[in-house]
Image (cartoon, rainbow, N blue to C red; front, side, top):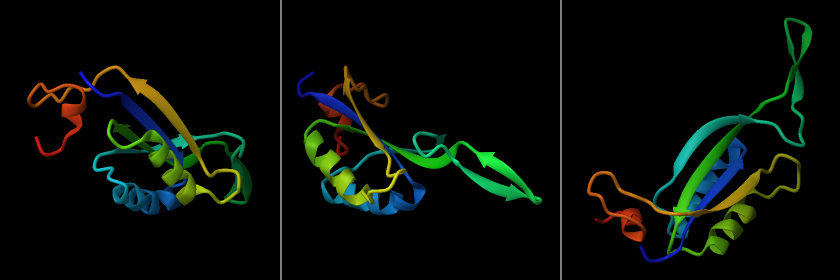
Length: 120
């Protein structure tokens, strides 16, 4: 296996997802896994009223975008996400970066960088 593989998880507000997806596509990100998730952080949720009674909503709707890169620099992905997602307010999101030991494409057994190529 040649080339360093890196996984980038971006967690942000659902309202920013389409803009983020378009920006990532522009820098060459062709594949991603997207999940609707619930989470809490510094925002600590908010109060909503249900049938006249205040209810604490501790877990907020978020979108988690998972990407594995090899040829596109991690810094490019991070800077793109930061530029798109930044509002300066709590709730802009988080970016997590991990080293990946290997990637295996199940359909043909290719591994590493070759498993990420979409034309094979």
